[in-house]
Length: 314
Image (cartoon, rainbow, N blue to C red):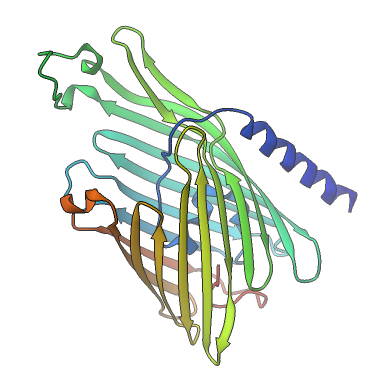
């Protein structure tokens, strides 16, 4: 028990230290099918399924808008036989305009059994991002200058190591996750032309959900997501999902002041799951694109744990 308390104290100390540092603007990729992407922002989720799995996720934001964000992610997770230790890997290719980020992160979690029905996982994320941004290729809309010196350079393959932490409290039908996936802030500067950019800034993620049994073969799961970045508006999202016969999820979500969306996920068999989501902007941006599209496929290699469902509720 003392060892468990020591793990919790260390985690809380790391969270408080990270929050004491300032951040500036929201920057991390956003996913609609949150059940498959929690590990990208919270390493404590790693190993929670009690079996090896791999997830491929692709998201094209604001289809039809030039330079719109596009993200491709590959996630692997597994655990030891006793499920106390989870381990995994997260690979992400993220592009916004000419700005590119390729990230490789290892994920680790340790499970603390608080009661027979409640567990707490503490996680660590460690890895790096390669950042590039070709400033020569931007079109500058400034009638006062023929050439803007701040955009006469190229940021090419900057190597940025980083680490993050997370906690994930859960029972059979609920979860609450808190995480900071990248604690080190990496700033890009070019003294010769005055270009300044924050390639990585700090985000605090809070995610929660609960699964209700509402009828025979029907479950209802409301979810809540929020992202906090000092100096930027707080992001808040709400969702509602219905599961039919442990086979099909249908859901909707709303991000305050930003967008709303619909999603569907199908459990094709005990090992294979596929999902699709579409988002629509609720702001004036909706006039310039035809929505955001996201697809995901998850394969579970070895259904060895009798404690977890064949379709994960979270």
